[in-house]
Length: 243
Image (cartoon, one colour):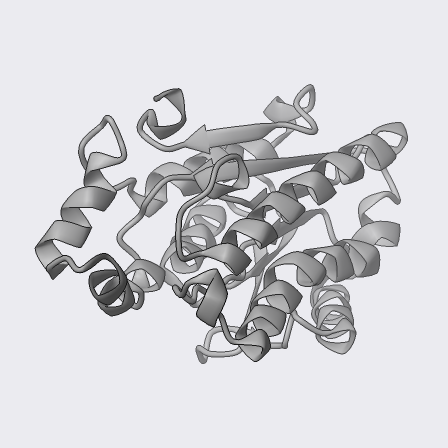
């Protein structure tokens, strides 16, 4: 396992399925973790869909550790519905959290991440950053947007020794998947088992991706060993994008 030797990392969505594993993985690598979420006693509570919330989380990292080295942007949510019926308020809320939120986080963190070489930004995209799926218009749009944002951050960060990369997980069995099953069943006229089987079947590995598999890639991208990688989108998808 990579050792981060006291480097300060802010992790958003830290109370979720992947988020908790990220907090543990970075903690085991001796990073100083500032976990951010709206829930969880272990987290600093901030609404990262707003300018104020993003500034608060950066200020909290500086208050605790007087520096910031790594930004892991993992916060997300899902609503499954057709374009014709997608609620505008849900669209705005999801896009604020998953597209505008990462921009605001980068903006608030930028002076600190570029203060000296070695800053890292890792965004959690999805295979849907590069492809699409029916009934997920806002999620797909946000994941495409955050990948483009990450590439711009890589270009602008390069003169400062800052790298910015995305990971693209396939289906993981986390609460965000569990919470969409009922809508998937209704929209696709399938049973729960059939929906789960279709998710697994979309991945040639014929299983769900484990959050720990994604967390290890993110840890590598946060480490000094990844210094030559920037502007990349790295799939952790059991081969889904190879189809």
